[in-house]
Image 1 (cartoon, rainbow, N blue to C red):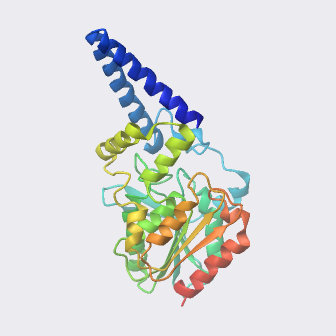
Image 2 (image 1 turned 60 degrees about the vertical axis):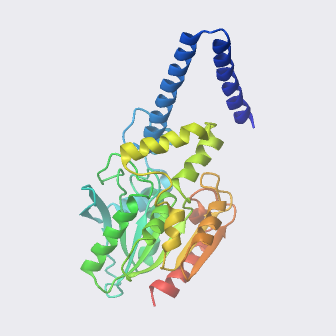
Image 3 (image 1 turned 90 degrees about the horizontal axis):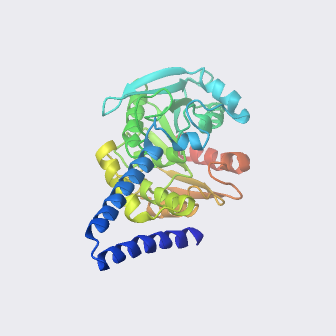
Length: 337
């Protein structure tokens, strides 16, 4: 409420000056005010877009969140990240010419099971922090591990983050690489946060039948709704015209928009069995988005699971028993048969 009152006050002051200048016939002052407003708006739009999406920016959201490329690992993921970083580095070239890389850990204990999982990390997790422990768990379950660095992250090239919109094609390429190397592969797609939106966006593409299951942990419905939520609730920035202009700038600069090919649109075309997981105390990606995705999902087999008392991307930590019980059941039913 305070932010809304503040924004209304700013609008009233700007409008008041405009009316005053117009009433007094001060046309030059009115023109200067309009010019200043346009310049200020352009600066805000360019700053916010780069702040959110650019890999390198004078001020980046990743740095503010303490998740920049040079940030130190938190203690609870150090061992799993170091384990994962011992994996082989495999490279592909994206549809737009980027060198994309993945850590790959082949499971020598189960060489003939042909089970693979592609794990997609979340926003600015440059060292795969948020999927490293899950990778170890999938390994224990007998899976070969692929953990791609999303474009603009870690060892992959890219000057910006595609928020799952462009990455859906990258995941399709990783799937096709696995199938090329092992035609009998049975593949599960797993993603968390931005990675969750990525795997369900990829699921809406024409994927090989080798993709047997999709698991989305706290993915958002669309960039538009996620940015709308953050701008309004966290930053107190007016949605109109700021988000609309950010969307236009993103189209021009990064070649994608916040609505087109979003997870909520792609999920309508999913065929593979899809499991949705979300913490009910998630305020970063609102919990309600899970049900929106579930209702829109066209998969014949789908399920939504709530992890109680879990905040954003914390379900695996808050209730690992329930979390892995649901995932294991899903994999046994669809990926491992």
